[in-house]
Amino acid sequence: MDKKNKKKNILDFACGTGHSSYVISIYLEPEELVCADISFRFLFFLKKFFVEDAYCVCLDANNYLPFKEEHFDTIHTIDSFHYINEKKRLSREFERIIDPNGLLMLSHLHNSLQYNPGAGYPLRPQEWMSLFETIYPIAIPETSIIEDFIFHDKLDLEKHYSIDELNSSKAISITGSRRKSYDGLYKNIWEYIIKKKVNLIINPIYKIKNKNKNIILKRQFPSEFYRINYPITENYLPEKYVINCKISNYIKNRTLYLNELDKNDILEIDDMMKRYIIINVPEKYI
Image (tube, rainbow, N blue to C red; front, side):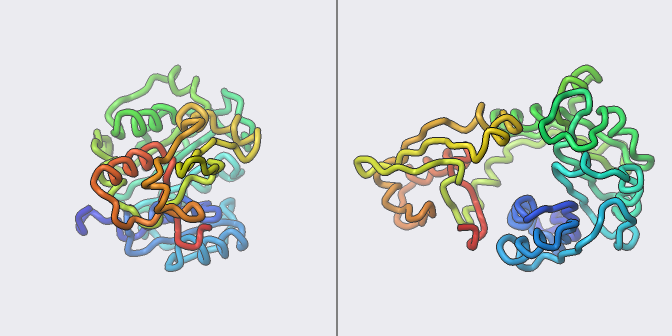
């Protein structure tokens, strides 16, 4: 990614313990990453284990935000807006603090027309979009984003979905800007992602068993609630996977050490990254 395309100031709002913050930090490399959440304990874990140089702000999302106008190039939040009571106030605050050319990304917004186990206080898709006055929203069914990315290596912001398509989705995502045309078709995303081999481990969703010098992985959900709430995980992540003995020799306590591996081994690792069998995590993650 060119330096000129980097985002200077990014707000990861309702960041939790920092999983999305870490992804933002390694792939976008912002000059300033501000992580905000109501839980001081979550922010402590974020700072200690995920993004040590992030600026952390403990706040209540139902109140006015302590940031100056037009400060952030990007505002991101995931799986949080539906738990906020003062949605209209928060949307006005987002519009106040975002740069005129900035990008707003609201991921995993629950749809009140569909059942969600941890629903919170969801809205209908049209109601989510109507929250904003100066930002033009593009709404996409969440499954479409995930399937386009995983199976077709693209992010399509050019396609416009019907109300019926949005209403039938359990969750939607919204991107928006003050510009009317922030859409576009982005391809070859995986090529950039797999280059970032920061600290690779076997996905914790897999239970490990050693057999004949190979590593046998078996998918094991942390709870039944998790399995039901994230069905695409079950549809996409393989139930079983065998890591060959050569690559297995470079794995210790789930961590993969990239030493003396040839081109074919790297290609296999790239494939495992694309399937989220192996993932990038902070050094202190395990």
